[in-house]
Length: 519
Ligand code: ADP
Ligand code: ZN
Image (tube, rainbow, N blue to C red):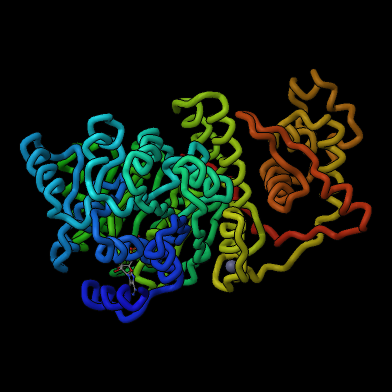
């Protein structure tokens, strides 16, 4: 069985051997068992469904939300001599009818289809008469409300296999899914005792770093200059920010293009083309850019603003180095970014529960910013997995001395406790600073023994300390719009065990650069 698979890999794709994970996925699918593949971007997920599609007697449906990716894959398959087509909303009625006829006549091995198509009852009726051997669901995290890109149309995929006799095999693929999202995919897609294949989340060719409290513009310009001749992507969180950032880079003599949903369709397509042709060096974009563009030689991805969650961050940063060569991923952080993300959460649709999830995910993202552990490890452990320290991220390479912050931490814990675990980071910092504002006096916090205990530090510095204690798991933030600081069980444990708490020495931050970075 796997011999045939290997032969097909060589004949149609020109590769010599399967990669990690591909063998297990294909073996499971060919033996008639459902499968869930969690494989990072660039791992080679498409081969996992294209090879079985070639070997199965009937049709393979590939569900994907990415129109440009579907088109690229269909073109590539046809070029390799595998008959494939696509059904999506960009087709005219006549073209759609023609394709439907040809599919019914069995002219195609693979049919790519947008999830919205599957919502109609007529589609289900038509499809149930086809000889479908296999259904591959790409970007399967879109079926989960807990994922970073929930699409209700994905919910309609699950009923199709049940209408077909015999039931086709179903395999789901995703690059990023927490354990909860994985379970959600299995349950909602009704996968039948699926083989689970996880190739590990670590991307060994990527180096991650976070820059806090720097002047973002000059940091960005210097990263780009350090990559002369390389292609890169800069993500910003709003259209306005994209416009301003791109204009700034152009003024610096950098060939920067821009991409966001506010631009005309044509302008966007043109920018994307220019980027693919390497006519522009760097694309400044909102997260509307990149879903489905396959440019494998992106050497760096800079986040000019904090992304909304770790899934989105890893997906976007992961567009660097898809060809396996080194990629640099830098996150530029300022506290103002959190305010923006909260605003976006509040403006966004979704019920209270959805918003709570978003706030929790935002907290996790902020935790990443302040962690002192290996950044690759921090990401991988967020997805419920483990890996060795990468040896190349900003934290692994951090040579600043480790400072014992045990005594300062105890003061923070005492303050949080005295404030009854009901206030946020900045209010806690204010009390420790001894900022005598009206709100503090109203609550009587100016009479607490901890009031002003850190008056020699800046509020910003104290906030940084609090966040570092959150990142290390001593404190936690509630999953609410205005997160309150709370103590965790680690505090008691650390104090009982006489544990010392450490932190990297912080670079002193000039106040002026901190201000300009948020604008
Ligand atoms: P994903 O969808 O997981 O991000 P792709 O399916 O786009 O990844 O594959 C990424 C790249 O790896 C593509 O250029 C693909 O042709 C290549 N690739 C896939 N499988 C193999 C293999 N077994 N050997 C060599 N290259 C492969
Ligand atoms: Zn590391």
